Length: 113
Length: 115
Image 1: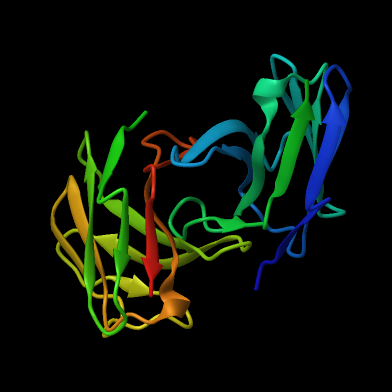
Image 2: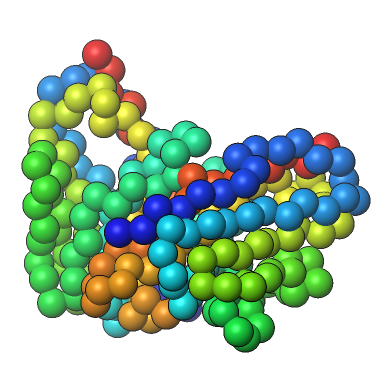
């Protein structure tokens, strides 16, 4: 059974810092790994999707890497801003879209102005 | 992409009662997923709802507790039956993207508090 772990559970940093969120998964047989952002009352917003054959994806100040063989992914946020404050969720697709996603518990991020 | 709405957005219920959550998608989709997020926990898949067939439930979830309807390709309901305080959670529906390796799209969630 796939299990996803995220470290740290919570993080509070001053504005402008670069930061790294970590995700690990137990079964390397995945189709893709996704990073979501969760804001209260607004559901989940997809940030980045890395296919199993890819090593990284970038979108603006966000960069996600994937090392499938070691079961690890990182989300790098550059020049953090208060608007980045949210819960960041890592999710793994092990069923090609047919079986739903397996989520980690998330990292609750606070960016101090 | 897909735009998903859920009703109600939140509710406070008494134990022993039932609540039906509605999920509406702006396009036709074959599969819809229902997730639960208990306080401080990750999202956990409850079941997959396919139009025209019985929902498929994950380990630990049963139809008597979480009956699901899927009357057409744009709509689904999840009922939380005989509620207890342990059912206090956020319930989210989602649909897969239409293209290969496209992300899943999520509704805004229904926040349920059971007293």
